[in-house]
Image (cartoon, rainbow, N blue to C red):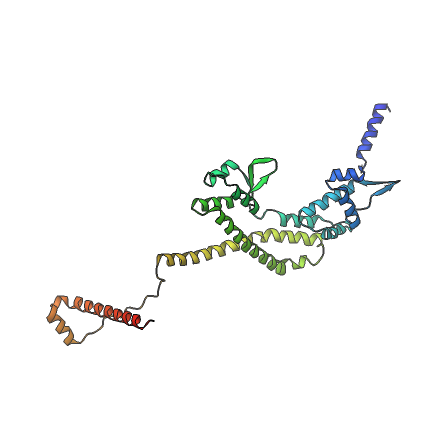
Length: 319
């Protein structure tokens, strides 16, 4: 075999072999610190390295495990939970279903897509006057997100929410009132979300959460249920909000306009017979054509007189 072919074969064999790392190299490749890697080893999250003389040697398995741990930490798992998941993985139960469930829960719960807005457009949207305090408040609330190494643009996770704030401000609502209202609303909505989660956990997902972690089949079924039930919370809140808004908006409008509440219509009492002598006396007084008008006017005058008397007595009797 020519020397060049031998060298090529040797290089290919070397490339196909599993990579080997010192702990410093593993830290650099994984993004973790040396101290973190040693802590994972002590907790049993990371397999022990191979000992060669006085050196510890790590491989691709360790690097993949570090990436798995980092991904699960980003998804909100604790180290104790991650240890259970990884032990299940090592026991051959698999992580595919569990990670699919995690991805389903952590996925977007709305079809709305994030957008970007420049600082200049943001100022123009809210009256054209720069307001650094209002921007800082919006960032704190998560309405805006700063973009690393970019001071001229913001990420807008919910363009609809920003559009609502712009409409309210254009209608005359101060920015500080909008942010205060959003904080109050967010607390109430988070309470609704927590209650809906408790409700579905008790009645739907409890059977899938008895095992820690659940089996692949259980996790896949739970992920399918999350996908089907996900829109129900928003649909329920939308329907109930529409009902409540109609009820209270109508009530407020009646109060501010002074419109009386609708009363049930009384049945028509029909004609009231009058004594014949009374009718003749009225006819002699005003003529045959004016009898009905005279009786109606006299009745109305009597009612008004009684109302005035009642008001006068009420005023005298009050302290």
